[in-house]
Length: 193
Image 1: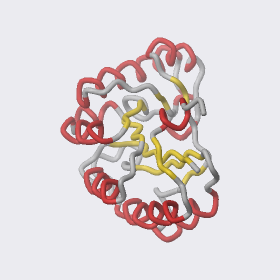
Image 2 (image 1 turned 45 degrees about the horizontal axis):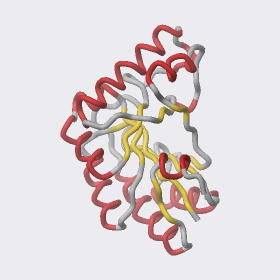
Image 3 (image 1 turned 180 degrees about the vertical axis):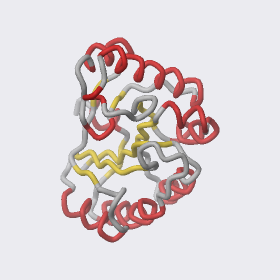
Image 4 (image 1 turned 120 degrees about the vertical axis):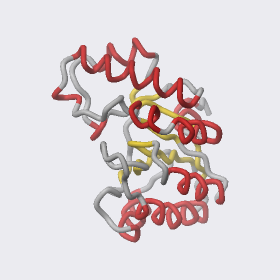
């Protein structure tokens, strides 16, 4: 049984603690990074890319459905450039902030060589305690699922993600015990068998 663990809104300093938890469990994940935070924390973006997959989550985390197509293209392009410059890795995947696309997104994806990916389970980790996040994810996961959690909080420059980190400490071992294998988004979605 396979699944992808993904994180949105980073990178931030607390992302490093999250990386330690994933390393302790031998788990790889995909991090959907915002360009503005990749520019602010390039050393953390590089640390993520050294062990995990990086993906595009726009430059400034706007509500895309409120944006003009030209703004959407600029958001994706600037994020793509910033993530590549900071991490040395080229994102292949894109997830819109709040999971809501906007008009013109298809063109922006094509121009940047990106593919859209959503999720099958969202932890609501921006508003729940670790126990509740873990219960929510563990109760909803299915084979070939995509879990979304957050290593940031929207556009907050200094987010507190301690509840997310503690939830990951609970979720990952429990899913490994159930026989799940963690893969990056590319590994999960691009396998032919």
